[in-house]
Every structure is written in structure tokens, then in C-alpha cells.
Amino acid sequence: MQRKLDLADIQGNIVRPYGRYGFPVTRHIFYNIGDAAAGRTFVEKLRHEVTTSERWRDVDARPGSHAPERPKVAINVGFTFRGLMALGLPTRTLGGLPTEFIDGMARRWSLLGDTGSSSPNSWDPIWRGTGSDKEVHVWVALNAPALPDGSPTPDLDARTQWVDQIAAKTGGVTRLSGNKGPNPEWQESSAIMRELPDGTRVPTAKEHFGYTDGISDPAFAGQYEPAEEADEVKGGGKFAVNSKTWEPLATGEFLLGHPSEAQELPATTAPWSFMRNGTFMVWRKLHQNIGSFEAYIDDQAEQFMRVGGVSSIDAARETLKAKIVGRWSSGIPLAVAPTYDEARKLEAEWEDVLAIQLKGAKRTKAELARQLAYELMLTDFRYISDVPGARCPMSAHTRRANPRDAQDPHFGLAKAPPPGSDLTNRRRILRRGAPYGDTTRRDNDSEHGVIFMVICSNLFGQFEFLQQQWVQYGSAFNAGNDTDPLIGGHGPNAKYVIPAGPANPDGPYICANLPQFIETRGGDYFFLPSLTALREIAQGSVDPT
Ligand code: HEM
Image (cartoon, rainbow, N blue to C red; front, side, top):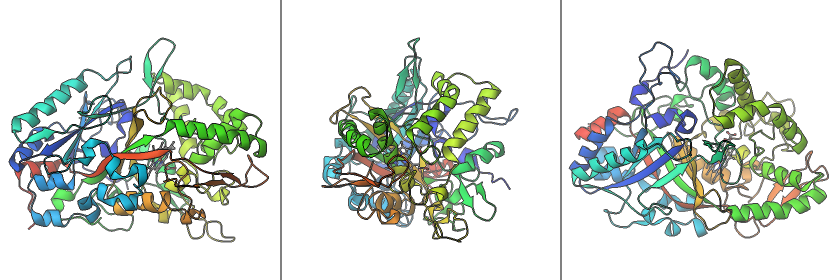
């Protein structure tokens, strides 16, 4: 039976990746609450404008339903633990919150692998503020569409001014400065734009290393309308061994107050009404060392071409990149196309779909059907036909981050029942981030990377588990001490082993001396309250008794 959620009570960024809904630009603004009453007034003014998860007319609502229009700017809000304290929440409610949320991201540095150039003392100034008047308490995100020249619509500036004004009027809520980048007053993230022959600029799904991102995302019960759900769960949901079908993940993995994959309500504090339909968000600024990444790929490609059985330097470069992430730059998974030639062939077969994606044009019914078939090819796969990782290495970024069926205890055992995804179903994360910064300079020092945002109901069991056990350790993937080849901490002599496969049949290829490709530049954990909880905060009526 289709699960129904109270979408009007749930913040919109939980259900929707806004980039796919016509909002390629996000402005992240951070505030400090100096006075609890002022903070509550700020929340009271803001909450009426917060974008919910309701379906939008002419977008995803059922025809004829009384759905609201898509907003000009989608607004969402979250609070750090210190922010909830500054708002004067009852001690009993504060004390029952999860310990990792109470700690905040900086204090979890060791578990998250934020050492060396990623350590909190090298983060952007806004994340290093000391003293209660410098702490980040509130995150306000303003998500806007783009004009044909790629810049955000003027509504974004208008909304920024409005939020600033309501903060200033309270006399106790201050916007925090200290974001590194063009404007220290806020952090902007945006889809990387591409210029078309007619001069218009359209959003792409690319990140700075050139990969296509934002393809695979979990699908949970109640997130989609039934017709959409049937497709979204393929690859996005959980694989049920008995029925051999994909099903939506339990709502409680991503929303508090709903049963999780363990058939339990995720641990929360009191009162229930305050936590229900809320969730947690990881906000993490990840710098990308583009110079090191491209130089390393160029350097290894020479050698890989000699020993790896590929015919050209381009093929070697592209194959190495694909082996690191688990997908070709176009997004096609290695699990579907394990060699350069197969990937090129598929890309040619789907050229029409890829071209339309770039044009951003309205699609005909036939074009939409082609698009859907393409998207299913990108997500609807498992690893059972590739136990040794000959196609997609076990340690590749996407296979680590979502091993699908590959963590099942029966995986790869002869005469065992087919593997399911039970052990992975509790480790899924909704990714809601986007690139930031300079797209033209291919060096290490310019400001560019990803504003990585994760939504999950259990920060410790989902995001932190992934980051610690699957990104920074290798044992679950028979990779010893090797960390994730793309985003892991690469200390001295870090390496990545590409098992023998169609691209290198003579034996494994070892990528030696991996440089550091990603560095953390700041962030924190935020609670994203429901609309009910925002009202309780604003009224000062959170009552744990
Ligand atoms: C700058 C940093 C990062 C870059 C450039 C990056 C890049 C990518 C790319 C290109 C994909 C494939 C596209 C897709 O499946 O949507 C991907 C997938 C994914 N990444 Fe990352 N990533 C980064 C950071 C992270 C972090 C920190 C985590 C978690 C701790 C993570 C978790 C995932 C997950 C869960 C998937 C989906 C895998 C699947 O479902 O098959 N990524 N990433």
C-alpha cells in the first residue's frame, strides 16, 4: 500500500533535490542568535515562508488537485544544537538529542577523518568562530532558478534582503560573515553551467572533476506519487530477495517519527511532536584539488595505457577516472559498460537523450519515455554479476558509498541464496549538495568544490558510518587500509588497487601515491524541524513533559 506523508509538514529539501526541479542556485546564509526571544521572533517571521514538500501545480501534483504553485525562491531552515540552545529550548529536550548532533561536526573530526589539511583549524573563518556570538546557529537556504545567462533570478537578492531585514528587526539575530569566496556574507553553490551555441547558459549535472553527479539517490516510502515511485525505487530503493523486486526504503531512514528499516522509530528526544517529520542534515564544504586530480590522472594514464590493454591515452584517462568513481564521466555505470568502447557505444546510442538534457527544453511524451529508460539504465543495477570487482572495483567511490547487494553475507558464495541489500538499507543517505566556486581555473588553490549536503534521520548510523567505515577504512571491501580513492584521506603512500578486468586483463593495476583530492573546509550538523516544530519553537511551546 502506498504510504501517505503529511507533505505540508515536511521541509521541501527533504523530499526534493531542488536542482532537478529548476533551482540550480542556492545561497546559504548563516545566523547567530544572541537572544532567545529575538531568535523566536525570527523563526516566527520565517516559518510562514518555508517551502514544504507539497507537490507543485504543473510540476508533480496530480492534475486537478489544489496544489500550490512552485515558489519563486524555495526557502529552508535548519538549526545547530547550539542554535536550539540559543532559542531557549527546554533542557530535557536538548539533553535527549543524539550525542553526535550535540557534539557538532568539528568535534567529530577524528571519526570523520578531518585531519591534516582538512582539520577544523584550517576551515573557513565562519566555522572557526569562538565565543557564543560567533557560533553558527541557523542555516537559511534560498534556492533560485537561473536566467538564460546562468545568473540567479533577481528574486534571490530580494529574498536575501527580506531574510536579513527580519533578522535585523529582532535586534538579536545577526548574520555571520567569514565564508571564503567572492562574498564572505554567504556561501553560494550552483550547478556548473554550460554555454550553448546561441549564448545561453544551462545548468549541467557536472561536478568539478568532470563527472556527472546527482544520479543515484534513495527513494523512500511516501516520497513520490505511486506512478513515479514504481520507477524511482529501481536502484534507489531496497532490493527484496524474496520478491526479487525493488521496494521503497522505510520512511524512518530519512524522517523522524516514522518506522525505520528496523521497524523501529528512530531514537529522538521529547516531545514527539517536536521531532516528528523533522530530520538531520549534514552541511559540509568540500574543497576539490582539481590541479592534483587532473595531473595525477594524466600521469597514471601513460602507464595504464602501456599495461592496461587500452588503445589510446584518452581511453586510459577516461578508464582510470571511471575506475575511481564507478561511473564514466557521462554517468553510465561500470556495472553496465565495463570498457571504454562499450561506454562510448552506449553514449552514442543515447545521444538524443543527452542532447535534450543539455538544452533543458520541454520534452514530448516519446522523449520523456526515452529519458526514463536512460535514467533506469543509470540506476537499476546490482553487483552480483561482478563479485571480484572486475568491472566496478569493490573500492570505487560509488561501490563503497552504496554497496547495494555487495555487503550481503551470502554475496559471492557458491550455491547461496541471491544477495539482498539489508545491510546497506540502513546506511543510505539523501544527497542534496551542489558545486561551488570557480569552474574555469583547474588548479588546487582557487575556491572550488562541493557543498555536500546529506539528509538522514540517524547521523551516527548513516552519514558518520559511511564516512568512517566505508570512506576512511577499506576492510569492508577487501581493501585493507586503503581509503576511498576519490574522497578518502590519502596519507603518504596511499594507493588504490584496480582488480584485473576487461581493461587490464593481465593483473591488478595499482594507482600508487594518491594525492589528496578533497579537503574539508567547514560545516556542521543541522536539525531540520517540521513546520509543526517551527511553530512550537517560535511560540516557545516545546514541552517535553
Ligand atoms: C567533493 C566530494 C565528492 C565528489 C566529487 C563526489 C562524486 C560523486 C560522483 C561523481 C558520484 C556518481 C554519481 C551518482 O551516483 O549520483 C557519487 C555518488 C555518490 N557519492 Fe559522492 N562525491 C563526493 C563526496 C561524497 C561523500 C563525502 C559521500 C559520503 C560520505 C558521498 C557519497 C556518495 C553516494 C552515497 C553516492 C551514490 C552511490 C550510489 O548510490 O550508487 N560522496 N559521488
